[in-house]
Image (tube, rainbow, N blue to C red):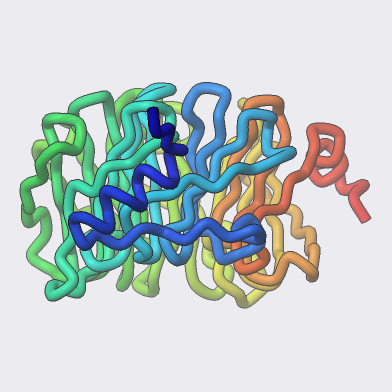
Length: 317
């Protein structure tokens, strides 16, 4: 009886269907990687050329998984330890139901050159994909099918979407775009923005606090779901593109030039720290064991729990 490896089987089926498969590369973990999500204790990372990597040991080692695309993957979200969706260029949408071991191509439109920038799965059925020129797509069946909606009169890029602990949804984008939904995405309100440049990310903190960050070191904190703002901008002058909450008090933002900005008071103040060799940081995520995963142009960099403590305390060299 002929036995197939998962990669060989996917390549065979793809050859029959004419579908493209990502190439398994020995240094994929050093390529441009753009987003990460937790699937239970597993970490799933996505990036250029359809790269999908998984780690079951807190980021110590990585295995690349073959997927049916070579498009740039920009976002990934898991609703539980098995169900996940990844999105990217050319309206690419991939779905997994086995912790990221195998992926199904649910949508791609090469002739419709729209880029998805982020994805959020609220549960195993409902989720939202957002992207360039105001793109907003919704699924109610776990990613099997998607419908396009218009939630704003403007066609600004939607760069990031997140949900707070109380279920409030937020979207941030270019030209100061900031939208809020208090009914699980049914309706969206365009809020007054404290800045009219581009936001590259947002980070909910608890139930009512939200951080917006983006171009030229701009960071803004709201304690009331975006109704009023405190300007916490830093003097780095670079892009702030990533953020993670390490514990109830500690936040880490990061971005261009290997710059980190550490807050130990819920975002009221930030202390800078720079690791130049990291170059451009695109995403940071807290690992299951309390470490920090840093993604960007240098691939994956992992900091253990004790190293994260040194970073937060200012002891890291």
